[in-house]
Figure 1 (tube, helix red, strand yellow):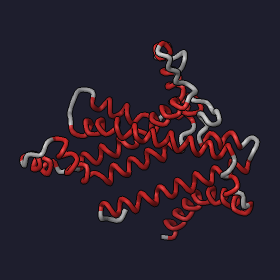
Figure 2: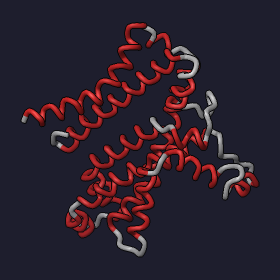
Figure 3: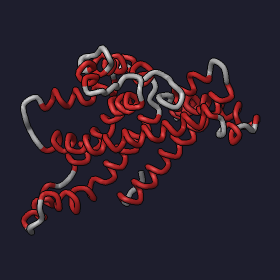
Figure 4: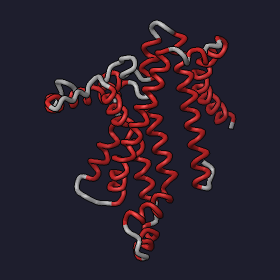
Length: 259
């Protein structure tokens, strides 16, 4: 028992000490609120909020049908597609960024075709969204698929036998049953998009007000403005922790169980 407690304590310290160190440097300065007026901080926060929310919306629209298909249909290549979707979760972010650049960059596979329509993707805000979507959407698809697999199909069949259409069955039967899973996947997707760094800097660069999200602003500020880097880090820690707390509370209230 003593070894168990020691191992748990050491693990807890490993997680807590780096986070505590950030606030130990930020709070005594009293600059946290003042720093929120700095252009680098404001622009990074605005861009992170806009791009991560747009990424989440795209993940919901595109990922839900994919999750349903993988959970409910058997077809050739299903296992391969399933593995391909989850690959960005384990792929090094730098590799993801290079892949996106080679696909959608100016000299990439589809770059010339896009430019013929006057569309430039690389090193733009659109590139930030694509990078975030690539690395974050699989978290939502995985959670949504798990939710769809747990639904008792007899309940759906009962709704259909009572005259409910496919959409009505999904809206009033399936969706409420898997809402905790969808909510959890959506929150994790948004949080992953908010913290994305590697793929973004490779594919979108770091341009203030255009592609410099909060993680990139931290990296840029670390070279010349340590206070700004620490403050941005503290804000991300607070936001991430708040997301986890809200998720636990929401899932507990919706699911009726302790999360």
